[in-house]
Amino acid sequence: MSVDRGKSKLWVRWRRGEFQSDIGRALGKFPASIFGVLRLHSGIEPSKRTRARRVLSVTEREEIFRGLASDRSIRDIARQLGRAPSTVSREVSRNGSRQSYRAAVADERAWDAARRPKLCQLARYQPLRCIVAEKLADDWSPEQIAGWLQLTHAGTPAMQISHEAIYRSIYIQSRGVLKKELQKHLRTKRVFRQSRHGNLGRMRSSIKDAVSISERPPEIEDRAVPGHWEGDLISGSANTHIATLVERSSRFTMLVKVEGKDTQSVVSALSKQVVTLPESLRRSLTWDRGSELAQHRRFTLATDMDVYFCDPSSPWQRGTNENTNRLLRQYLPKKTNLGIYSQDELDAFALKLNQRPRKTLGYLSPADHFNRSVASTG
Image 1 (cartoon, one colour):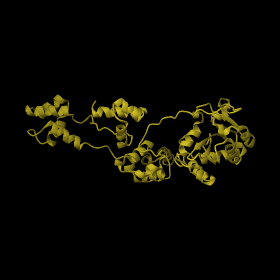
Image 2 (cartoon, rainbow, N blue to C red):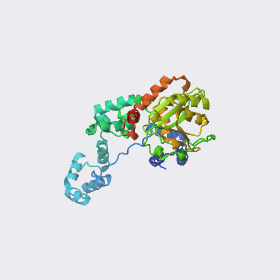
Image 3 (cartoon, rainbow, N blue to C red):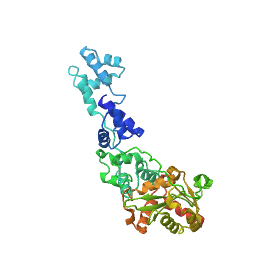
Image 4 (cartoon, rainbow, N blue to C red):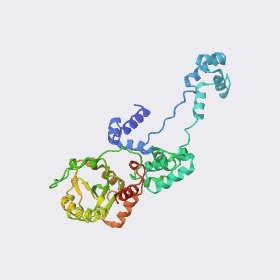
């Protein structure tokens, strides 16, 4: 297998979302070799230079050389190629004369002189580049930036850019547009673009008198009515945990400091936090099968909120909360001791997340959407 063909297959498999180890086995290479190629190109398949259809091919240049060697006229050679005589005449003039023209030399010279890809949008427009860099430094994702620009600069094409173009400018440093230091502000902290893979669900213990998610009213499913929440625990080092609550309609997030993972600690902390909300925004809570909410009836008595539980090994049934937990890892990375944060510090993290625009909200922020819900419910 040629090198080019092998790399082509590598990128095809990478786009499919295959793991590096699987790609290595299929290509007969070590995973480290696959990683090396991906790291070199930041996980983005490099663009291939191709010839424009309108330019002379190497075969046509060989025909020109043979025609000149046979002392045929420029017009005769052009007729045979189906080209304009001026095209053949300029080709010969650019590369010496009838006597010195050589097809291989002319083709190599044309390839070297070919126009390179034009500069990317960020390289051409400094105001756009400055805004993008500023928002990245403020922990906005490329997708949020692109969506926000569409709203705020709708009539200015020069101020529009796709999120993929922003990612490429961050990861492909040869563009010389955005500083590599901005990578640390991306939520995933990845060294290059990677395929996303789901995690296997975890089996949860049974909970007495648990009401299944299948019994939730339709109004919860369509997110039409505010006040329905999803919740979970995120874990850190030293057996530390934080409870997360996300409102389904607005994606508004609250973080709750808990003293432990036991149901007494979790239910007490959640109840204390939830009762600070207006009654109209305390309608229901959907949780997974974790035993930390075994005392769900005590929670309902304290908050007047119904509790529904997901099916075992089905985290996707709390998709809003799962996605929010991934966003929070930007501020609370895995293996962090979560016990060192006070409730005020957790509130600050939540505030920062709630003020970031979200694509699913039309690039409004969860805080804006939530405040509207509070105002509408009086």
